[in-house]
Length: 252
Image 1 (tube, rainbow, N blue to C red):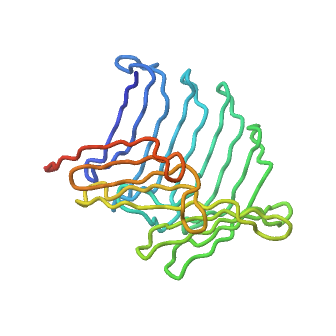
Image 2: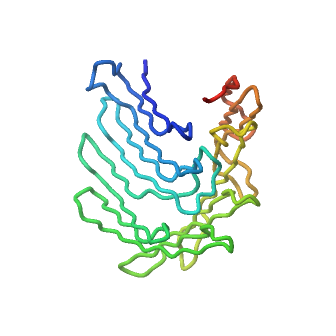
Image 3: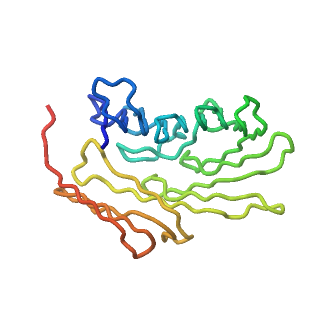
């Protein structure tokens, strides 16, 4: 039904790429693909770049994105922190239909955001970023303003826990002269109980102000011998459970 091609970093023991095929790729260079993912890690095993490509059922490219982290990467080893897409491209029947580009300053924070709404190569919308940082130097907020008018457009704020890990992010829309809260994303970090190469897992979900999920979400029970993913379709309604048996191995 499916075939996977996966590579790993030989020093970090973390996945660097994966391709999911819809056809058997053995001796078949034209095998249809479902998606591709390429990850780049820093020396501490935190993801700093992540490129993805999605295909339709015929193996034709429909999406291409290049993601980069916003320093510092507030994440556990084996995961990535908060970031932005550097480029996004959308296709229909092989034709480019829309694209986005972001530029970044010398510190790695977003600077400009350009949007080509129809894929003709002209970026009709251009926005500039104003950022603030926490006293610890973490990214605290990003406010985008329109280049043509100077008006505010959208704003995102970020909050962190006592360990410097991302706790939540909030999106605001500019309406009638003020920013109105439109979305809250809460983040939960699960540490590996044996501190293995994958130092932890990261899940996120839409929530209310108190951090309670308002839609689909995931909870992970992680012990030395097994790891169980609980998937909920809504608060209190478990829809699926996957348990993985874990075995201790020695890396030589």
